[in-house]
Length: 126
Picture (cartoon, rainbow, N blue to C red):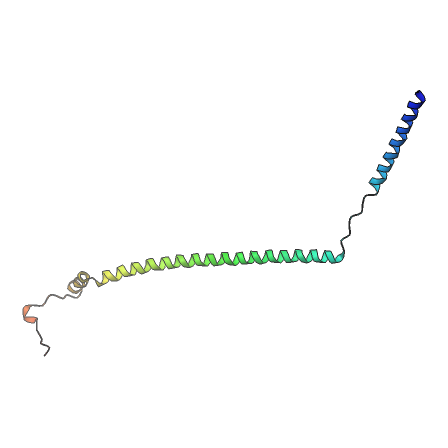
């Protein structure tokens, strides 16, 4: 019976070494990387260039849109300033047109006074 056990062990040992050797051969025979044909490489490169161009185009459009937004904001602030200046000028015109101011200038600066009853003349339109 010992001979059978020893024979089985010897068989297992040989089988183990055989498997290990086959495993080493499989490791050494790693599959080579696929070589992409040049036609596929060109397509891939063309697609990358197309995507890069589209991204550049999108970024360019966004920069133009942002620039226009800045211009619109600047113009709106200018419009607001001009409207405020317009309101100030309207108030100034109203002050300059006031009857009390005109009367004050006439009396004080121009030395004018109200006419006497003898200086008043009435005219008929006939």
